[in-house]
Image: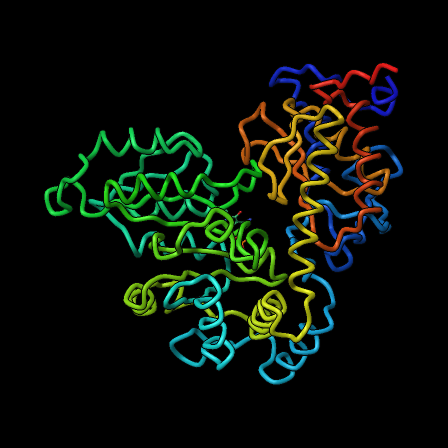
Length: 443
Ligand code: PMP
């Protein structure tokens, strides 16, 4: 009732109610909130208020310091760092913030070449090529490696950039049930038979596309089983490590390291620099032949301005820290911290009775809200208590599978996490999202 007094809509709504202007504006107001600081463990969120109760008109703005449970700052590199920041500033002074040129003209600095060597070595592939944006890496590369007459078999919950690339390629796209290797095999068996020579197949090429950690589910890919199916049917694998590279595995080398898959068993490894490494851009790592081919043919390499040099330097130096090449053990501590923080937070949320998706070790933790009407109540009530949490709704998820998506960082302290848990527990009770109520212990 206290939430109703504050003007939140009742929880059980049909679609028509959901789209009433009032609730729609309330939901809209939970997204695109401006930030006025670095996205560290705590950050400044701009609060917009109005005098007449209408959230869109006559706004006044003030910032408030909030605990940040929403950024993909897995290793805490998205703020000033004693090793990375001076190097990034030097690269800004030396190269400026933009190359103002495409890679094949004046847009390849020595830093870009160094980055590609560092990334290839880090992920365990012979070569790599980098792009200015992670999204574009997927959407521009997939149409270059496969086209009409090819078959893409895509996990049903793959990211929008992968879907975009697959659709734009002109290849036929089939979808397999999310993270279900047995269904992948079923879909493959409908198209080809085991042992059928590649030249006798009805498809010019077959590529299976999966992610290392699913960003809306917090789930680890069942990579060993998926690789086994791909090997059995001799099809290519494309792995998007946007959320897993740097975040999991003993030395941060992602899902392959964590689940002991040899990188040579993955044909194309893709990842982004926007999460664990606190920068921007994306990479493809593969055989020397594939990378050479991409560098000659991919329009995003030939016709787009190259990555900003300071962003490049940020990635090089943060990978050095992760590997201990800065002469400290900060990298190892960060990796241990993110694992401990993630596992602590997930198990505490579960103990409180929330429905939390995902696997241990994953720093991505969706708490199910289900009904979209719960989004504004949950999001704003947490923010009022100085905890900023991202809520995810249609079309990023099915309409009735709305969720709050928590991202844990190595830079969260135990005290930060305990404080966040208190707030989430209280708001969760008020909003009614403790779907597995825990019986109080009997004395
Ligand atoms: N792939 C996946 C799985 C993602 O989650 C994202 C974005 N979060 C991207 C690609 C796009 O990366 P970027 O944000 O670096 O453009």
